[in-house]
Amino acid sequence: MLQTVRGMRVVLPAENRRFRFVENTVRKVLDHFAYEEVQLPLIEATELFSRGVGEATDIVEKEMYVMQDRDGDSIALRPEGTAGCVRALEEAGLLYNQVQRVYYTGPMFRYERPQKGRYRQFTQIGAEAFGFTGPDVDAELLDLTARCWRALGVDEHVRLELNTLGSRESRLAFREALIAYLTPHAHELDADSQRRLTTNPLRILDSKVPRTREILEGAPELPQFVDAASRAHFDGLQRLLDDLGVSFVLNSALVRGLDYYTHTVFEWVTDRLGSQGTVCAGGRYDGLVETLGGRACPAAGFGMGLERVMLLHEVIHPDALVVEQSVDLYVCVQDVSLTEAALRTTNLLRDGLPGLRVRTNLGGGKLKAQFKKADASGARWAVVVGGDEIARGTVTIKPLRADDGEQLELTVAALIEHVARASKLPG
Ligand code: ATP
Ligand code: MG
Image 1 (cartoon, rainbow, N blue to C red):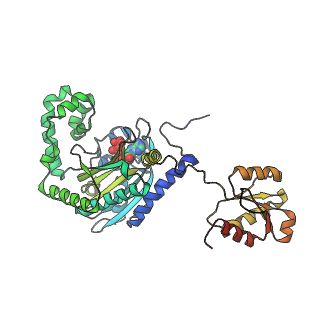
Image 2: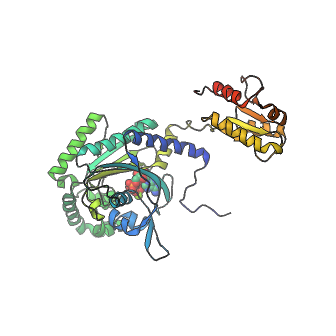
Image 3: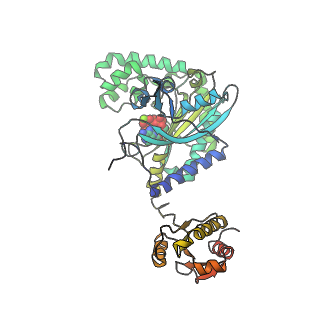
């Protein structure tokens, strides 16, 4: 048997219940904040990411799935959603001199070493807000995510880490100072960091290699370089978060791996998932729209890793959502000649009982065997479509669980009423 390609994800029904719960909960919060959903392509021009995310980032350097289209164009499976979202809204003329709040969800692809919480195909819900310069929108995005954690019942197990990168200019000044400090130590740095010294020195701050960490102890620090305007923005954000009751910790080493961030950057981190502890990350990216060829437009957003959020939910609430969503009504067919009548009757039941799960027995078989299947499906009732009953305009309903009363012969309308009452459905 062929196997799933390494790092790709299959979500079987048992796991999917939790996945959908998590996704729907986050969607509800986004809807509640009046963000509107957009659908974006999974394939983009490779150049969108090399320009948008940055040539020297891990994503573009070694994680992208790049291929040639049949006409020779270089295309990539999207590794993240922000660049494509910016491109799509700019192309539709929705950014210049306007404000937008949108979200999207779907698979992203990165060629990484697969492990728990890290896959080559994973799912993000991303939200982006365009056209707002102040810290109010940063606060709104963080408040929104905080409400997601509360709605999921995991808020006690995540913390918000916050930093500011300053303006593009202050970031460049810091970069120069960091290069100047690290260059004399270059031969002592690990190989990755040596390479990054020329390509993406800020990423060295993320290094986990002990000797590199030691050297970093004497390095210049980003906060010293942050300009006054950016400082004021960051102070404003912190005041708003205090007021909203969103707690956070400052982490001046937080730089994020993507080039497009300016000013605010943040990560929501949990200690409950081992090393894949970042469940949501984002920040402000005022320069990205221009970098991609649009007219300047301030922007901020986040990407949430749904698999990691789902894993966290499972750690915190292992017993929630494990019950199989069983069938409610199982329709048995007395004889194959009654198939049409059975399918029609089942649909009448579905129309009359929109909240219930109604399954038809397919493939024939003796009634006794069908009742067994009905029982195994977890259904509360079996409904029998039989020849004599059809002639009388009725069907039989047979309770499969204790305390559900007698077997009854009813018209479809009466049966719908009976089941609706028993399962306490409105109407
Ligand atoms: P990491 O440092 O864990 O590699 P990242 O900084 O590369 O994360 P982002 O690009 O900020 O991640 O993506 C936003 C979120 O998407 C992450 O916080 C994480 O929850 C999720 N995510 C990123 N890469 C993966 C992956 N390979 N598998 C599963 N989830 C992922
Ligand atoms: Mg990564």
